[in-house]
Length: 342
View 1: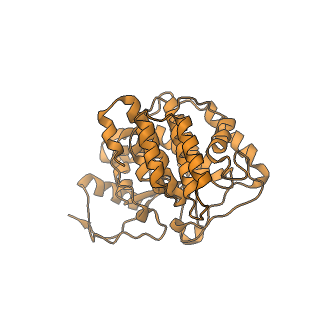
View 2: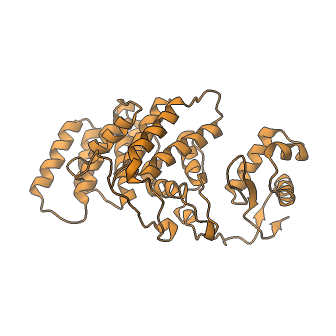
View 3: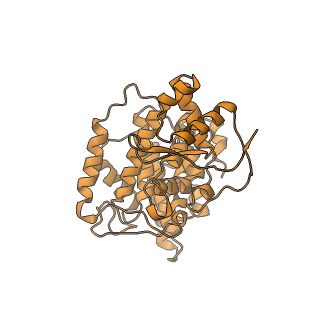
């Protein structure tokens, strides 16, 4: 189905097209594929031939008559309709109750414990971690963890934040929320819908195809933001999630590659890295002092702090340097040790 054609039509149709495109794309986080019939329902809804209420009724009737199978297509279809309706709707209240209710709305009649906080501990083998798992929230105190994160976010002030700081904060909030993993199943789809609606309250009119085309990347980025392994030299990193959010909110053009998210990924495509003279100078400064601050570095290279921050950001995007440890007590690490192209 060509969702892009609706860009040329009314804003209302385009908003619904985005909602459907997102809803269908998000099924990929659990390796689900909606049916051809679901696409027909989506097109009729976008064209105003069907209301969401009628779309629900038709999908439910379809699966009452259809023999049961084990490929979870029914789940993909029903949840897609529900996500599309939620994303297209303007109703939203920032609270743990809203988050839990989104899960209930998406999965009622599909998961036995829809809208209920899990009462057992979980682990999940992740491809991106070579089969290892993220450490999720303990079932004993999930509600406390959830309410704490919401309270912290509610008290946070977004005034005077730069775009970079805004992205970092949202990435931290949403990765912490996901890491709790309040529900037994459906956490990523619930978190994605909640994030879209929350960002709408911040003035963002999201209408691109990031969640549709890169939903698995979004999930893997959440995994990497919450995984560390000291023995393997792997640190938690929100870099990948921040790239996704920058593309989503500010139309940046970061390449979103699942392959590069893998903990065992090694970039051997190029023997040399092409760097500017100022970038090489900063790398040498870091080699001499890995604890140097950006402010101190800006004085050494005789550039403004803002310009120096941009150079550091580009070096991180090129996978040349990384921040190891916390912002206050950590240090800079050089990830690329091969020769630098003159």
